[in-house]
Image (tube, rainbow, N blue to C red; front, top):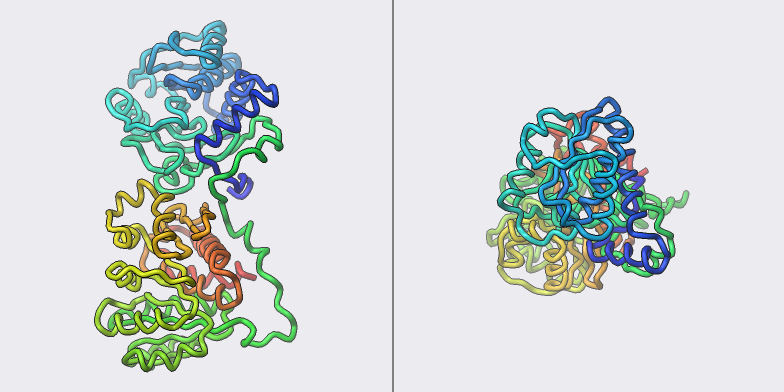
Length: 491
């Protein structure tokens, strides 16, 4: 993943790049198609070197044209090739028709799709839909995609897995579950978030020789981030450092039965370099928490007045981990909102915000899809279908840097910039992971980073730490395991 470009595009942007390359740079469309097919065939040979029986399933557009090139090249190299078309290839136009003509001239015949074509193959090449899909996949098309997914064969998708919306990352009813996807000219943003994370498998990229000057003429949709890219943003610490240089993070939360959430956030803040870390929590929790983590300053607070005494010395306040939604939680939340400090708002604090939406000029919101749905008055299903729209809408509604968590977490600033984190893994689907992220974001703010930079760095570091832990397995990963991995990565 680290070798992929960091620039992500919408499908229309990539089509614009394609047309500039053809019209202004004089690269014939059929030449780009042949380059794409050749790249896919090379990927197939590299990834499945023992496979000699290939079925190429083609649809009706330029994606199908790429598939016909792959089939022809495999046939010429002595592979056993079954070429399956869902539509009549003689109805193709333009470059796709030319590619089909070359495949036919090479001696290939087209079959109508039948399940037995899969049973006698070793690899499936998906050339059904391209990036222009904007309708729900149903009928015969859905049946074929389902049959491919159920075949148990490895699948190599051309450009994007068929059925995946290239812009939003949602499945259009049915989508190919590819083992690998080779994308061309520009990476599509939907491949790296939502359902795209599961549909694409291992992502590869080929610019097909498009000149660098072409990319200067089309704005990117967003930027992909990872810790490999961002870790150099951390300055080295001067030899005469003291804790006062690196800020004071105050975590507010830990209602009855939920002290652990506040502890996780505080430990994460300390592990990534907060000079001082404090927690305002229920008085009943202080003794046990102080014994477990004495490096953190634990304060029992009964009300807003108690909390105000702690706020003055804080550089940033993280509120929400284990906060609850009772009267105690409401009073602390109101007190924090009145503080004028930079805020990181998570968990139950987001739920309280959903009841009484307000704007605040200096905060980061970190909802998962369920919390995002409550903030926008919709459903988590709607959020996941339009993740880019959702994170932008929340950022604008609340004037907040917003992190929409989940596979392919999105970070959006009210000024309009969007970043997408391509790191992380399914092991992060366990309790406390969001609390850790909250603490990391707050710590970076305390250390002097602006809100958008802090959110990006925190999301990337959090994902990288989880990926490091997942080397020994995803199941059973605990939030505390991720916290332990933070210190080595940040250094």
